[in-house]
Length: 123
Image (tube, rainbow, N blue to C red; front, top):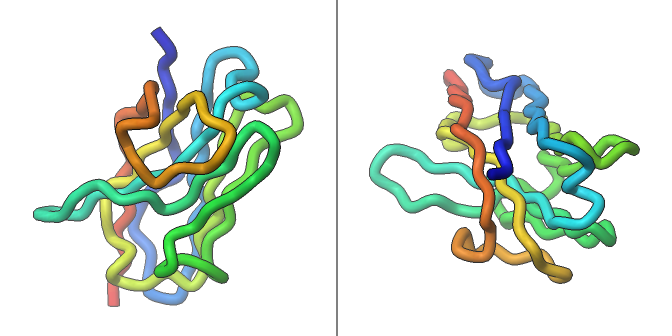
């Protein structure tokens, strides 16, 4: 069982920044794609950003130019740098890993999930 562990969430004012981290066993992100999803109350889980093992990325239109997904050199940790945060970015953020060569926004394509970390942006 692959267990992903997110950290870095919290409360921030609009315009601020946060960096989320996702620790994974071994160097899973050298073989699997990694993704960040978010789910706000009453809404469906949506893709924020994804990166394949080859480095191809995908971003939600709402976060392009503000968020950046990356991995560490050892491919053991996935990051999401979030800048210029807005109140509408408030959600629980989940890390996920899955076996694909093209980034996918479909949560069903991801086999492993973290427990989620709360991000709250105040206006």
